[in-house]
Image (cartoon, rainbow, N blue to C red; front, side, top):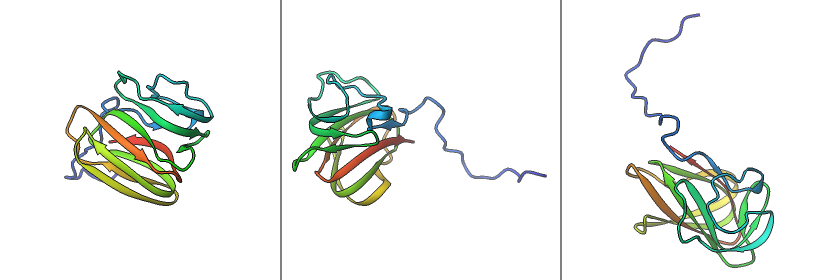
Length: 149
């Protein structure tokens, strides 16, 4: 069997290790958690750390942590901060509600979430280097993971 020939399509795949690694918000795969509070199943109140490590996330407010996702506890929204290195960020979300995203204390966008888990673009065409995303998640939204490109 012969493979197809070369193409003129530019390969824009990031080099391994050049972006923040995939980050899961469920307690069964809690990697990259950079908050000072204990990250454990159930309901809890969280506070953002004074100094958050690169390539990590932290929570603020009341959250309910499940094995596969995190969701605001009660009727109020809750926040999280993502410190990342990538030019694109996607977030797997489900439920009903909104997610408000602010990149590096600048432009703000609101994402309408509806239905079963799917991937939403939360930041695109971000410049190279470390960045911060401040994210407000409304009650009724389940946050599963972040992926980077």
